[in-house]
Image (cartoon, rainbow, N blue to C red):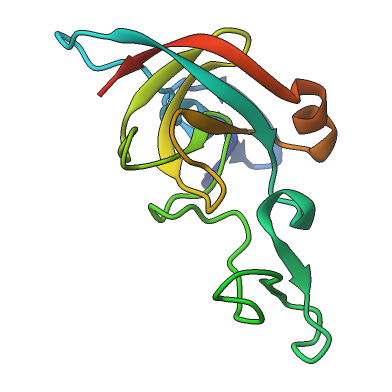
Length: 159
């Protein structure tokens, strides 16, 4: 009896002789990246300006190169024309719900933040236009990022 185990976004599929058995496992796929504040650490409240962003060229400053066979390149700044890895943050992780871009001199990498209406997030990215207490929240689509817009709000921070 052959058994193949495949994982897809938190679900394990066990395929045995043509039958598919499904088991939900909360430790797999997208569920193992749950962000929670560190235990036994004090938090404090600050006021930030939170803006939505996604992986698109409008939000992240990239465009498809003409000579690079349509590969993404930086469209502005000192890296203009150099290859861009779309969806990879400055800390090396892949952008997902909960990824926050911030001024790392104020909110360093790994800082956990609770944003009302968005949930918990972790600072994993930075941006050239992000200075002071401004943060960017990652969304899966440009429409969702535009719907969030820009909001000034109180957030809870764990460093």
